[in-house]
Length: 115
Image (tube, rainbow, N blue to C red; front, side, top):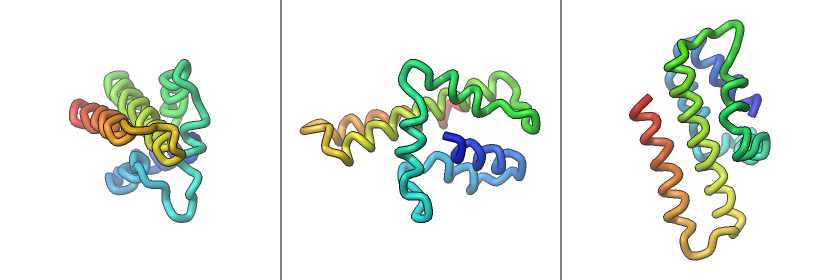
């Protein structure tokens, strides 16, 4: 989880949209193929929002509360979508894997639009 939010903080500090977008990719970077798996395993459904909120807080980057809450919603949805993608990749979904991945990713996009 640390790596994604490290990049998030760099992107916010530099104002780089393309760098920020890399933190929300459903495809891991070629140089760190296990990034998404580590991101998903770093938390649980019971603590994901608190974990993300903690990662987004930084003494160097002060986000207004509404913006912080929007990012928490976005990354929580992203975490859930990554979980669905990983389950589909490992064959844990059977017939409905495409629908589950689609619905989870649609939630990420909806939060991005709202944010």
